[in-house]
Image 1 (spheres, rainbow, N blue to C red):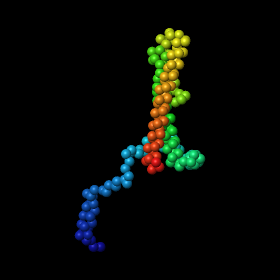
Image 2: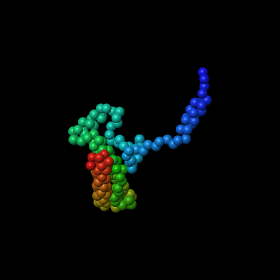
Image 3: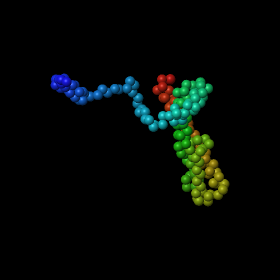
Image 4: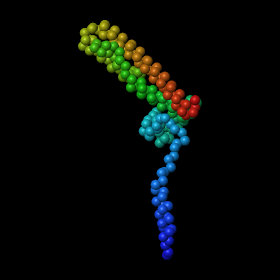
Length: 168
């Protein structure tokens, strides 16, 4: 078997020549401003792909409402975000030195904490009762404002997502 040194040298040069060439960088066809993370909660409120029965129920629910599956998923995601926002919100009313209320923004509240201090107890039953009613009213009014803002935010979120989906 005859060995050609020129063929060997030529093959070594070709192989080593590509080692110093930069790799081609492929850019995506469309750029997004928001990074998409694997565990970022993008599927909150919707069933996973691993559960075909839940997906079938979701498709039926979307069809019954006259929506596409993507629109239904968006609605579920928006509802989940709104519920979390209302659950996490905390408002207070009253005087923390006497009678105070802390609550979330749900109506009726899921979190309701009533504080009556010794100074509040010293006011007497009638005064504590009126202070408690006033604290509940002021906390409820603040919760209502937060609910309204959260609902506006949810509608804006849906509008923005619909635009990014190309549906609006």
